Image (tube, rainbow, N blue to C red; front, top):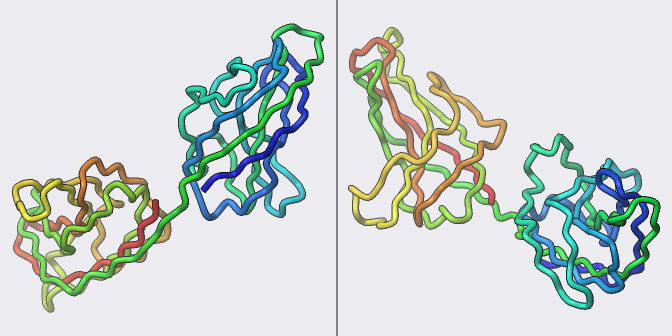
Amino acid sequence: MRFRSGRQDLVAYDPTADGTWNPCIEEKPSVGFRLTRARVWVAGLDGVQVSWGYQFSKDGIDWDAPVRVGSFTTPTNDAWNFPAWGEKDLFDSGDGVTKQLFVRFGLFAKPTTAGQVRPFQADLEIEADPVVSGTVVTEWALIYGKSSSVAREFQLTGPLPLAEQVNEVRISTEIEAASGESADTLNVQAVTFEGNEPMVPTDWAIGDAIGSYVTATTYGTTFTGVTPDKRYMKFGVRARSSSGNLVAGRIRLRIEFRT
C-alpha cells in the first residue's frame, strides 16, 4: 500500500537537532501495516536538509512527539529522491515510543545556515507492507524426554511456506503428561525449524526458540520476534526430562503468527 501527500508548501526555520516538523500525510489506522519506506520529491530546496518521520496518536487529535527516521539529506530539486533511509518497523519499540491507534507521516526540515527561514515544496510518499497474520493448530502428538541436558526434537507441523512472511509468533502449549510420572517432569520448549527443501529431512534445522521451557499447559500472551532465513518453516518442540529418566506425554500447539 502507498500513501502520498501531494505537493505541499513547507518551511524550515530551526537549524538545531531535528529541525522543523511538517506533518504531510493525514492520520492512518496503524494496525494494518508495519514496515514502511519513504521517498520524497522537492522543489525550491535551497540550503535545506530533510528527513522523514512519523508520530502516533491514541485518538487522531492529540499527537505524541514526532520521531525522525534516518539522517538528514539534501535531495535533488524537481525529482523523486530515494535517500538511503532504509525501512522503518512501526512495531519496533526501540525509538522509546508507544505504538498508538493512529499514525501520520511527515518531513523534518532544517536550514543549513542558522537564523534563516527557508520555504520549499515537497511531496512525500510512504510505501507500507500490510500486516498478514494467521493461526496454525497442531494435532495431539506423543513426545518424550530421557535426559535433563540433551533435548529431543519433535516437528509437529509439515513444511509451511511462511519463512519470508513471519516476523513474530505467539505460541500456546498444551501438555498432558503420562499418568504416574509426576516425579519425572516433562520439560518442553517451542521452537521453529527452517529448511529450503521441504521433502529432505536432513535439510531441516532448529531456527528460533520461542520462550523458555515449560512443564504444564501455557497460553501465549506476547509475540516473540523470529528471524527466519530459509524458504520454509515448521513448528515443533524440544523436550527433556527433569530427572534424566524417560518421561512421556502428549502435546499440541496453537501458533499465531504475523508479518
